Image (cartoon, rainbow, N blue to C red):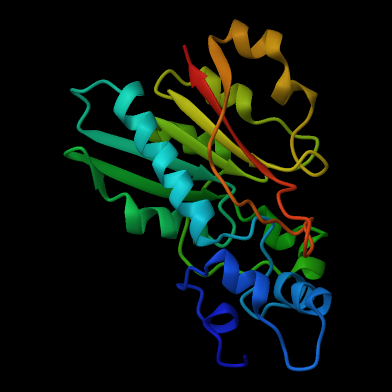
Length: 227
């Protein structure tokens, strides 16, 4: 397993089965999960990207583009904020350079504050791809149609800024109920006042650092649509 792309290739998209079944010789599935999540030489990820998760997220985005955005709009901007290693945006770009004769621009942004954060020496997050260095507020100046925020920091709410920008037709949160957002993120009164509504997604096979073998799916993907 030392040569496995799971541990060596940041460009490699693993299947969920690979993540579930890889192991060192003579070790338990619990040890293997701990090594993959917390001691992976490629670095730590809050959300562990696998093929099923990515493909179902791509399908959700395609559906959004099909019914939500004006047919005359030929160029779609998808902005990821707090992109971290930028693996998610990188994999999305592989599959969404164009769709229905539209150009899809996927732009990863991050203020890189996590590089100096107290938690990073413990988690060992690594940035494998370049990002546009800016905070989430400045990222909104890029006129996004869709915003993606994966594991927005705990006790913070950036969504008010997403809703305030008139170009934003949808924002997508990938999250965990213990480690992300604050109460304002889910305030139905505020969300409705800003003319958005919450919608469940069919994004499947979430894996996150809060999971363990036999107990996956402690993270979620939720869509917020402009009405």
